[in-house]
Image 1: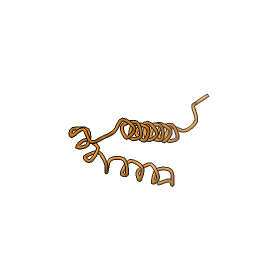
Image 2 (image 1 turned 120 degrees about the vertical axis):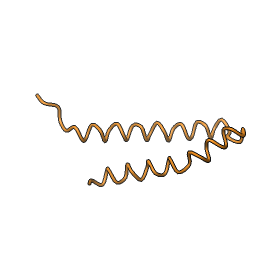
Image 3 (image 1 turned 90 degrees about the horizontal axis):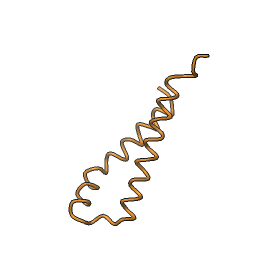
Image 4 (image 1 turned 180 degrees about the vertical axis):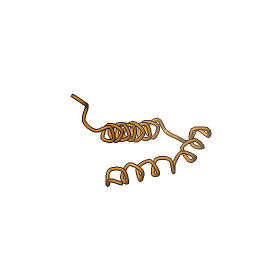
Length: 63
């Protein structure tokens, strides 16, 4: 297991640990538009890390 994998898993855990809180805040109208955008940014960043990790697992393209 690489350091990058451990960091990715830790980032996944950090983001998902807040899902219930975020969901409740959305349902009750307690989440501001700036908080929406902040969380969306974290999700986009995490998606990018996950995509990069997948690329790293595939290795260089055959050629």
